[in-house]
Length: 84
Image (tube, rainbow, N blue to C red; front, side, top):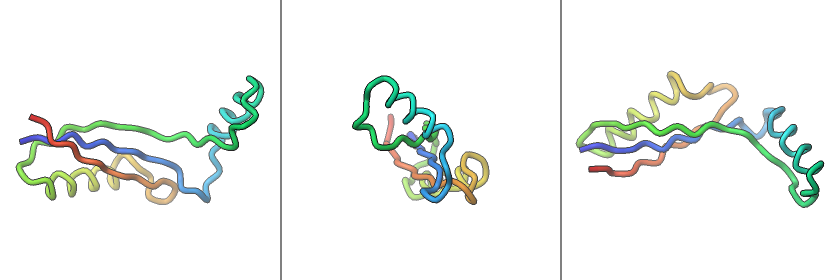
């Protein structure tokens, strides 16, 4: 059995998002004055071959903590989807 782990990594709300500010400013310049804010993050898909969803979720969280996210500055979420 395999699971697709859909991982989202975002800066913590207390961290200034310089890229997000640049996007917000550019959108305002394009006339989108109703855009109040923009935040930039990462989206990663990982296929995990495990029989149990709990083990796939554990592995997804572990790879986030060890490689994909900086725990000091970033938050992450892992969503599993069963695949054939």
